[in-house]
View 1 (cartoon, rainbow, N blue to C red):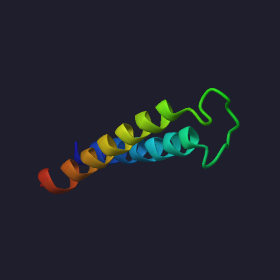
View 2: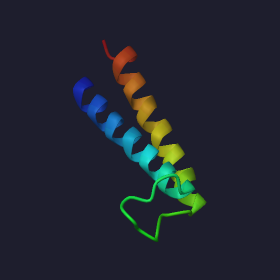
View 3: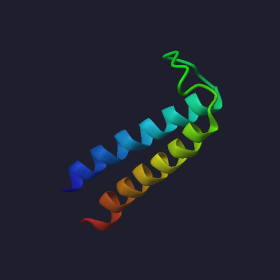
View 4: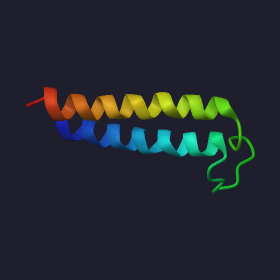
Length: 64
């Protein structure tokens, strides 16, 4: 359970950071016009990154 939550949390956090970068236009790879410079993707990415970080924190510190 702990390993699974750590993996899911890290993937979700990295995906969220990627969405923030795409939504703010910081990096445009892959060039997908559906995500580039659309702020709603940055907001969704921030939520996803926060959820992933929370999952990792929970798995690391609460599941002993």
